[in-house]
Length: 579
Image (cartoon, rainbow, N blue to C red):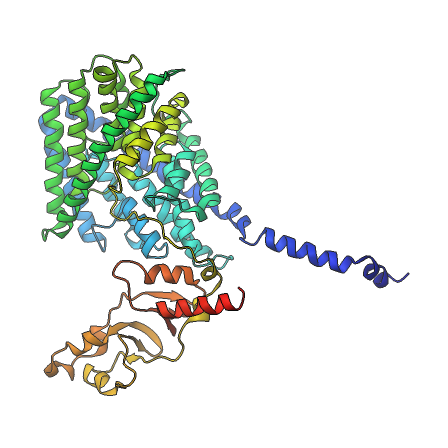
């Protein structure tokens, strides 16, 4: 029997076609690419975080802390000098001194398609090292998350042609942030969960799960290769807890939720005020440094000892767990730590406050165990307080519990910590120390992910030449087809966009001498042809959203424009066509 007839008789062609279809559906999300890309992100982030940790925790902060404990009056000038240096770096070497650390990563995720400006990368790391290493009430997670996220965003530009889409940049941003967090706390699960929880107050960035998992583990392995795998904070975990402990944990969570809510709101208002204050950035930070130093000096004046509420403060964890500290001292430490954090980061300090919230919750929890619960297991309540404050402050309840388990080595704390974190999260409502966290999108329109901007854009355009004067532009307008916004181009390439209102607001006597180039918004949103409509809609729906986005080729040539109406029309066509 001929081979061809044999194949047809037994339906081999048909089965081959079915196998191909099954494999195509199985690998439709192209997840295997992350098996190569995510480890690269993890290694780079792990090496960067190792270097940052060595510089701050070995070479800078320990000798400075020792010097300040011996000569307390030097605390204020040392911290003020560090903040002034960081402020000068941010003011003169970065485009926006108020954009950095975790907040920049969250903003890039929501508003910039995962894009991080790399020209300011090293100045921001230097400013973070000056902020934390010279006494600011902050810790290493800020520069670690920023360096990891920025690495992921940068790596996308180098690997874009290797089957990476526009939406993958946001995934790589989050995955890099996960790697940075996992390395700095030697806690891969914490890095994974925090990065997924970070962008939203009420949901997870699900799409980044696999690459974040791989990058976190690789970054952790890279870090422990140099610094060892011992948990960052060594607790003496209790093996059991009673039902009474669970009730006390819920009450502690409620109290900390109220305190955290108050701090969250106060911090956001103070931060907004300082951003709007028309003073030089370095001066604002110098003031914040002086106030932070005064907090440290005042606490040392009242309570003699090695405990001081400034700097990265990792050494404070075992100190607050040691017996011999009164509840008044522990509560005072928490209050001074919150004040120092408000002055450090509220005035523009370059880092984040994960550890300050962690420490504050731990000191309040230990005081609660001694004075309210009268429990011998101080460590247990300190852990619950830590988890509760992180959950309420950052809106990351899962991270809070996982972090306590991984970083302390106390897995028996999980259930009480979970209860305290859940109650604190609920009591604190929507308050968060992050001004860029959002509630998740209410509607997920699956069809938009499969439609590109090139398919949905308007190709017949009314544009303005960058060399035209405003007078020429207004004279050429077709009164029957007026638009709100017009792309401004030069030799086919996008210069920016201009609104009709902005053109008409130019005084008549200046219109003949004013070129369109000079009034165009050069920061107008641009997206590539292959950008999917889910990403485009995200841009069009952001606060102060543009009326349109311009669709450009790789060379910057204008190919079309996209509006919300175009997106909805494309969705309608896609649904009707059975996409």
